[in-house]
Length: 105
Image: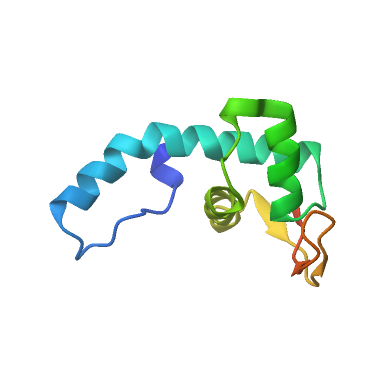
């Protein structure tokens, strides 16, 4: 997945230090995006929390530490058109709250 196709994390009015940090962390972001995409393809129609639990069990140290990190990367994938969210949320089996599910496009 190309780094140039990703939406920027820093904003145009952010200080230069934010842009430097974004460039420094780009490889890690790309790696997690690729891992998230593989997970969505492997476990379609899962919620973010379900995907996170599956990834932690399957990938161990390489998996996102919590659902918030994964949620950001799912958003990146959605914004570049690689995945889509379900139209209706359902009860998440991992935490019991209503959440959308994800699948590759």
